[in-house]
Length: 72
Figure 1: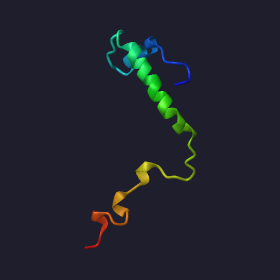
Figure 2 (figure 1 turned 90 degrees about the vertical axis):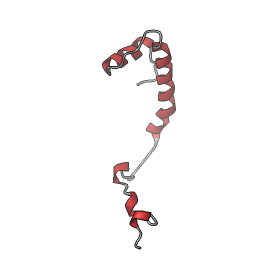
Figure 3 (figure 1 turned 120 degrees about the vertical axis):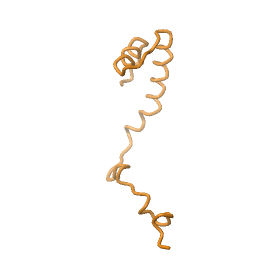
Figure 4 (figure 1 turned 45 degrees about the vertical axis):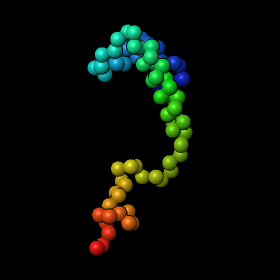
């Protein structure tokens, strides 16, 4: 998405593309909600993660103090 607001027609087109039915009366509300979500999440793109591994690399069982990882 860009900084250009999503139109109701575009929201309906994207919904159809995803296989989701969207009534024309609901399309403006969906477009507005999508714009709001985009505005809230867009700052995440500016974050610098450096050498941070992806979430899939995290293993809770290896964390100190985890009940399943403690020696009894």
